[in-house]
Image (cartoon, rainbow, N blue to C red):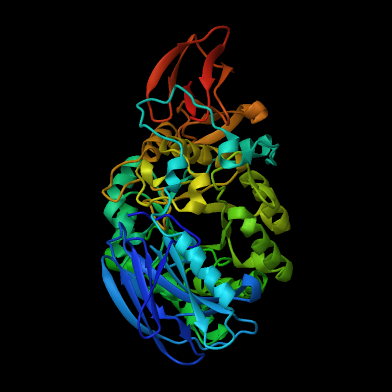
Length: 615
């Protein structure tokens, strides 16, 4: 099934009796609705989904409108229907347009599909014009119909432009990573002083983490243990998570659990709009946090029932509250951002009080902010500015610095400017002020994606085509992010996601638990450096060269030293200082070879795929 996004999918109008029009979207969708409507008067709509999607989809419906001369007037009204499509199915609905907008000339009935019911992950979008009973602009109406007819036919194959990829057995041979292909650039980055990072004591557990839900972990716990990951961010419902957390304990994993306003499967629907007031919303959230703390906090119900310690160490207060997960999107972006910035401090304070009053041993992570396009910076800054005491309501600041196809060390170019993971970390520390010295910053969600044609679960939406990596480059970016985080002093990185999710192909494992290159590369890194400690740098990013030295296991004084080396753009021939006349070198996934050293140095080619020199 094609799942490419089109702003207006091809449609063919066939005029029928009873003033109805049937619109067809290729072989996927057929919609029958009246040619015109009257405000406040119900009318029938027939939706026929004609094929089985590769992944079950949720249906979103709404009305938008056009003004004179075709100017977009914005959202007319949402439609609160909850429909799902897992195969060919027909829905007969009765709808009503209840609003009359000034200057409205054509109403637009919108249908979209997405795996999670969100607009940003839509896999189909279709728009059908409807004439109001009075005040119709016939010329604009004809233009809408002609435009729709002109786009009839099969959707274009957007993935055809994505780089081809063939699996390979070794990664000593490097490739060029082209900044022009995914709109990024190399610029000087703001880094904490290397000496400060080297002087820090080793972390109690390593940086390597992954994001998943409890049910997913329960099914894949054995595979995650084989990879070696022992830091989990678990989201979604916590009701019935006992077995997943029992497995986490058995595998020695630490858990950060992300909480919202509900414990069950409807937790992601428990947004502000589902409640009559802020007070009711906050009460529901606080009650849910308290129930979780009683169950999974130290000495709680879980420990008493199972006789084992709870692996939950951190609770995170909401997921991406600066996006629609807390308050739904609205046409006025600035207005809804202000609402989110005003509500979230109340959410955080309520949750912090609930946790610390019941399970003070649990740490609280705050913000969990969506960071693509620097959205986290604005959210965090505005909240700190309006709430000077907010740092007293969390132990860890969490954020999600998605870099949209750019390497973890580079600057992503956007039409409004550019941003990078490293520079944004420095900005967040500046915003935190004195609190930055005593609070950790964790990356509880970030990642990169590859194309459906490269084995991903989803075909690539048009808006993500320009950011696609190949699976091997995806693996390289993930392990480099773990390494880069240690250079930045960020102690945890939870990669999105265990499986492909939300139309985002970034999973370590397929749904059949098959391993992707990222799983092999991460297993190799963890096996080499189970408890790494940064000890120095041969090159700290100069000339795009990243060559850092690590103690493989700072908990074991006898453990070996490892040099991790890559070139952001690559390939590049480098001379690296080493001990001995011969060294063992590993590629990204664990292939080994020996190289001679002369005068205390080894010559080696490095590039986007990291290599490791053992000492």
